[in-house]
Length: 110
Image (cartoon, rainbow, N blue to C red; front, side, top):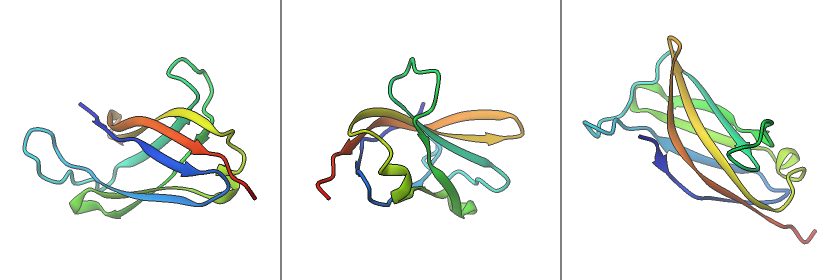
């Protein structure tokens, strides 16, 4: 089962957070060596198109340490409001949703 986490992103700013992926059963880090990590944002669960995609970087594969990032040029083009997102791992065509939740884009002033 995916971990639920709410994210707040300032429109027009760079956003980055580190995820430490752990196994639900053992609570040990997931070794993500050789994994592909994808993370997408949609306006709703029923949207057919992504609003944006995170850049995903594996920082420490053995400890399940993954960084997801949105550049300021990406966030400035997302309308303020609430969205849904998820982070998925893909290992040898086994896809697992590891994190999901609500992402809120706060409007910018300047």
